[in-house]
Image 1 (cartoon, rainbow, N blue to C red):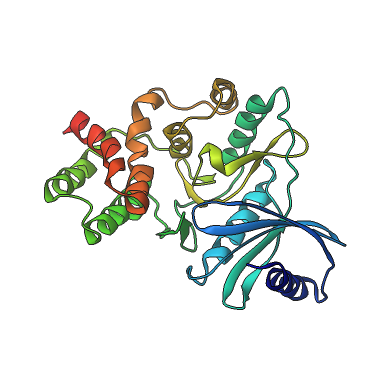
Image 2 (cartoon, rainbow, N blue to C red):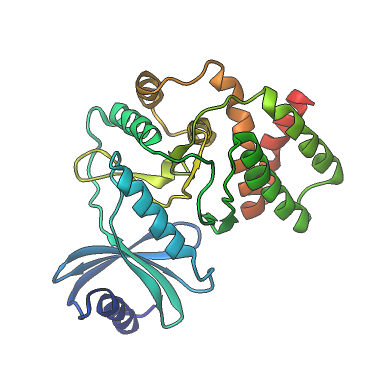
Length: 293
């Protein structure tokens, strides 16, 4: 996007958000993840962070905005404020509070673990899921509610991703058969816990250090689920300090044997990555199936 056309686009977003245009004093383009463009905008009213993209689902940024607001309402972890979202000139956009990054505080990981535990405690949901579907990455994430965690995990997480992989010819018939037979084992392998508010895409790339040295979470795939799946997801790519897990455990102890369940929960993000990036991620799924079948 050229300077002049970019400024006009940005000015139109501010006009829609505030009812007036803002003077743009500077732009700093950022990484927007796998699919988005992103920029920090310095204006006469302050700094803002903007993501935009063409050719994405009409409601993708709306659902992200709703997820950010839901996490913010919990009041336990810093979440960027949603300013506006919409569509201008054929481009979808999401305008957010700009978070100025700073070095992590000395107790960054301990505080992160305690804050996430507080978020998992602080909700009153009676069912697993959410009252609307959303996205994980660019993939749809169905959230039809259920009273039963195992049922939800199978239907809305494992089976949905499997069907996408079948549709795209990414899995063999042999794997499909074993994958579905594994469902019958889950009631004996996974514990029951009350629904917890989850960020839903808990890897290190979706956290940043705010200007106070504490964690700020971004790019959620929010729903209410078993909190163990969140902790398992955090281990898939690493990057979390040991102090994080120790502080979480002290604040909100997990049922014994959690480490034995991590790979089971992570079938879901592995299958998400299969459908986003290809079959190299099937190894994590195969490892679990060989272990139990």
